[in-house]
Image (cartoon, rainbow, N blue to C red):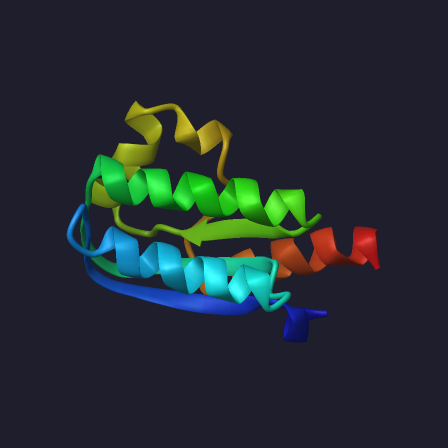
Length: 112
């Protein structure tokens, strides 16, 4: 099932400056049927509210297409953004890509 899961690795800052490019990439993937996405944020140094809004928009889009989105956020300083805003209740968040892919594989199995 994991062949249906697309892993996107984010690097550096996910901010008002980079968010439009990320939004375009995610919309393109979803429009091409890649609706099970793992966003690996292991290499993310900084995440602002615009970046968070792009992630929330992507989650809404994949769910509209009966897909799923999971985040890999092993760093406390990035995870803290999701905890403070209550988004840990909205996004499935994992420490490793393998766990996130495994989770979406189970989600996929329920739709297959």
